[in-house]
Amino acid sequence: MRNPMTPAEFDAACRELWRACKFLSESSGRRSEARNSMVRGNPNSKHLIGMARDFAAPDVEMLREAEIVALALGFWTQVHDVLSGDHLHVQGLPPGDVPEWWMNKYGR
Image (cartoon, rainbow, N blue to C red):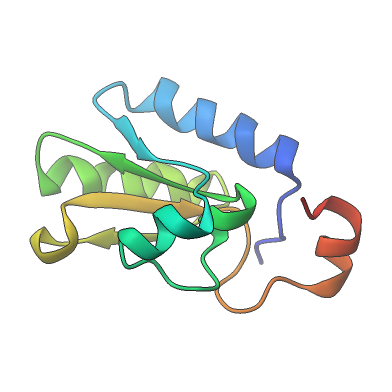
């Protein structure tokens, strides 16, 4: 079972993902509410608290390869198709609301 990551654990895991998959390039990290709205992000997006990042790759097969690595690192993941721009979304917290205990300890 995966556990919610701390911000430091999330940053370290993102660096490890990039080390393992040098073909990735980060396309989105922490977002302001205005930027999140502009890209039609979820109003509860983990990007808003710096706990989600999106990575691009040359093709979808490489994104799927990176997703396997990301899952092994403990991320919650989703590969988005061409309609939303091919990218791998990773986050250090499970989908849904951010746990209150987490926000009390790490929220920013």
